Length: 160
Image (cartoon, rainbow, N blue to C red; front, top):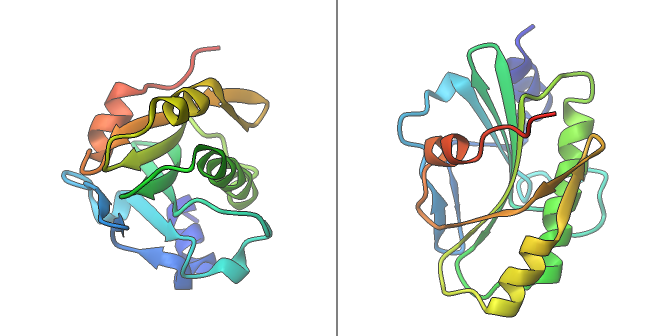
């Protein structure tokens, strides 16, 4: 069975067709609906084991035969850096549980933000690393409205 179809089947009540919260949106232009699964974690909190703060969305994107996993927090207002890092980190753990036996060609932890972020918050976020399958990934910060295609092109997979 196709991985994205399997995820859709297991988490059907969590599926969303867009990423839009708190006045902040991820653009999905040029993304075919059969090439992406968007999980809105607020829709199905009971489906996840983390009792701690969880990011807004988990995305699985297929490019050819490769799968990219994206953990995303949308911040239309003020950014609480510590909480945002915890949300992204917990999202990474949930992604690993959902696709535990599947190789991921790219993992992208991201915060989309609308308002100007405080310098101290930006520094704290940039200095943190999100652990995913034994590697530390820098959290990406982009503006609300950025497209997923742009993010994937701008942040290619880490090389070994």
